[in-house]
Length: 254
Ligand code: FPP
Image (cartoon, rainbow, N blue to C red; front, side, top):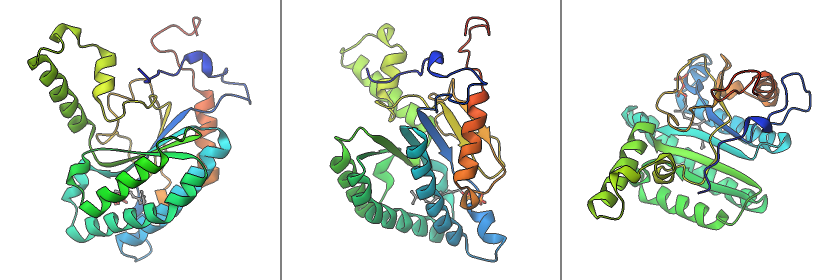
């Protein structure tokens, strides 16, 4: 099984300026709508500017030695937004994938998608499959996009797939352990996030990576996503370097 829990020893002591960066950063990119509203612009303008921030942060991750970036681009609950906004977001995503794919492929970035892809339109599904297949062999950097994603829905799908195996007599209910659940989740093959950043001032997970973030460090900032740049990302990494990750052990043991 490829799922790995980062070892506490990977992180140098809090005061070490050479502290190892988080291997995996997850981001809830919140605040696009407020950014646009405060400028008298349509919400879509905030999403467009948010796509620029994403480009910046992807580069900042690579420069800092982060190897996995997972973003919450569109939640299972975002389908309830006005149809115009949903369709603008889908178009933006399609455009982004089309525009960035060659560059990502050249830079050996592996692209993955998590979430209920079956709800997306066929053109996007086509782009997603193309991007996934084209970059499947890359290992330099791992970029995962959560689309039509909800952690509870992901867990329901995982439980159903394991229950089917029990029904078929392939496994016994008592055989089900953490590894099996990890492997049944959309995030199978990804390490757990070390650091989760949420912009926009709210301090909640909003159904993002609930199982996977059991030992993740959280960083909440009031900065709106379209304003989030390299300097803000660096501040998050500096804060992460100060955290002592104990995984249930005592401070002395770590
Ligand atoms: C939350 O802000 C943001 C989203 C629901 C969409 C995130 C999408 C992007 C940043 C676009 C770029 C992504 C890709 C993959 C092209 P909000 O609209 O809820 O903001 P608000 O809380 O201020 O209303």
